[in-house]
Image (cartoon, rainbow, N blue to C red; front, top):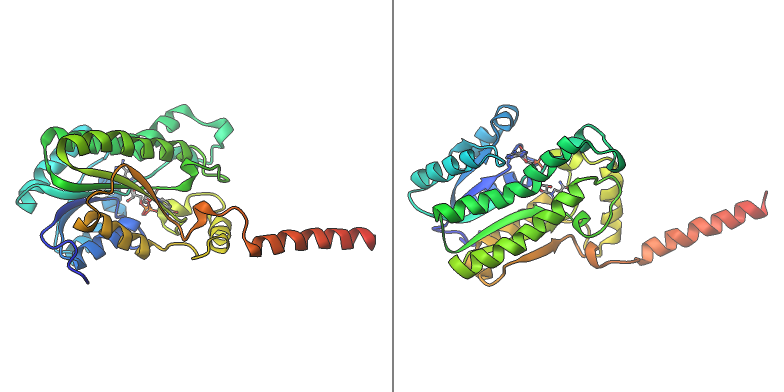
Amino acid sequence: MYNLLKGKKGIIFGALNDKSIAWKVAERAHEEGAKFVLTNTPVAMRLGEVEELAAKCDTIVIPADATNVKDIENLFQQSIAFLDGKIDFVLHSIGMSPNVRKKRSYDDLDYEYFHKTMDISAISFHKVMQVAKKMDVINEWGSVLALSYIAAQRTLFEYNDMADAKAALESIARSFGYIYGREKKVRVNTISQSPTRTTAGSGVKGIDGLIDFTERMSPLGNASADECANFCITLFSDLTKKVTMQNLFHDGGFSNMGMSQQAMLQYNKSFNELDHDKKTE
Ligand SMILES: NC(=O)c1ccc[n+]([C@@H]2O[C@H](COP(=O)([O-])OP(=O)(O)OC[C@H]3O[C@@H](n4cnc5c(N)ncnc54)[C@H](O)[C@@H]3O)[C@@H](O)[C@H]2O)c1
């Protein structure tokens, strides 16, 4: 505990259960002295355990669908009343693709679903910031953060239309970050997190193989949800006031790897085995 968020107020979107990245962020923010409101969709509130988290963090849950501007307006209004003042940080930890859920492949997308993927996973980030800016609810030097994934830059097996949503999300962080920084001194960033076993993460086909692959390819290994929460706390704190418009990789070094020693050994081994099989045929 460093008291990094003492006196700070915030809103945390996306805690569903104790595996959620947002759940871990809420626990750490509470430990670091922040006061905040939790929010999720009414359905998630019924299915999840978010009320339990709220009790632990001495706060309330305000339902809001992050694609609905009226809900967001109501959320900010109620949050300011509950927190007794303007906000210093916002975590957008939201992602969902109906195409992934319904197992539609990238070359057979349902376009209604595709719109929903983009609205929930990317455009909602714009909506949250646009409403916040219009209502002027974020203090100067406030910090807005969303969670992304490396499929925004590189093609990864089965990530599907979520890759497009993450690319848009990161672009929104840059475009809005410029305006919000210039006019209100609010910073906007995305964290590109390692694959993590959460409810959303487990929806991605082949996630176990992917987690194993990135674990082996990264010099520091995968970053856990708890480690991601620690990183989020630093970005909400006053120690990172000039960090904005960035996509920050939090992945044990995976994003800058091409070939590892271990992977090369494995690659050569498979060819040696192939040659051996040919000779003994
Ligand atoms: N798990 C991973 O491997 C991984 C890796 C990189 C980035 N991320 C990102 O981290 C973020 C959090 O996901 P998670 O892994 O903690 O999974 P999670 O399933 O615990 O969280 C996703 C949350 O999004 C919420 N949500 C869905 N639709 C919503 C809407 N319309 N309005 C408001 N909230 C809505 C869900 O209720 C849920 O709480 C997502 O943006 C995800 O893409 C996850």
